[in-house]
Image 1 (cartoon, rainbow, N blue to C red):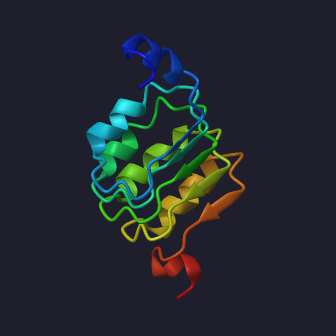
Image 2: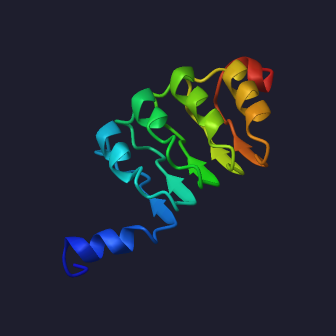
Length: 131
């Protein structure tokens, strides 16, 4: 325990990396609960299988994000991923195994995210990888 809610609130503003991968009980509501961490640089939601497009769309206040891991989120579609276009500081994005995301949406992301240098699209729409 950090010593009370006030201390926790003060400490939360300094969090730069938040790893929630494989936390299968994290929901869209849980994602919304971390959007006040405006200094967050890295967020991993890999395999948080309860998260839907609504949760991904809620990430828009996190403009400082440079790395985002959304791998293996079966309920996330093009609608959710399209909202990431406003996170223009992203340099790394993992969409691996988000099988409902198509190559057209990935192309839109690549055009909208000027600093994106690392993109994982393993096991997405067949056309993207030429399969």
